[in-house]
Image: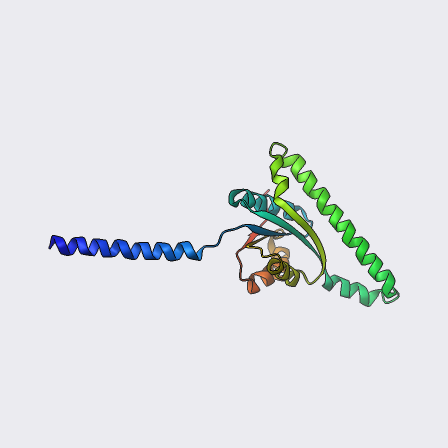
Amino acid sequence: MAWALLNAIEQNRMETLKVTERRNTMTQDIKRILYATDLTENSTYAFGYALNLAKKHDAVINVLHVIDQTMENSVNRVGVYFDATQYEENLHQRMANYHEEINNQLKAYFDKEKADDPECADKIVSIEVCHGYPADEILKKADDLHCDLIVMGTHGKGIVSQAFFGSVAKKVLRRVRKPVFIIPLPKD
């Protein structure tokens, strides 16, 4: 009887080890994080989460802002008087402006929140501004940059929040094959 009990215990221990091994091989190391920003207040709040994850996992952060093609299409319909050269110059200027704005936001964040931890700034390896449909570009960049995780914010409260959440974050969540952190605005 004692021998059968010891055998059952050993068999149970071996099964537990197999399950643990499978779990360990299923989890992925987080080494590269894509932080998608729309340059709103909440995206800055979400950056704190991206930075915290990067520090905990010794990962790097790629920052991405997408100039929404949907809005551009609307402008193009209204602004048919622009010639292609003006449009391209305008787009490149806005991309440069957004890049500078991201740099300024990150600098302000580090000056305000992380003045005592200067190594945090080293976690950012790239800042990219591109033009397209936000969900598509976020997914494409996450794959192109071999990111293990995506961090992005979502807006406000109520119906407006649900409308935005449906527009970008929800599209990303429907199609992504990587972990995604959606950070809501904190309650005031």
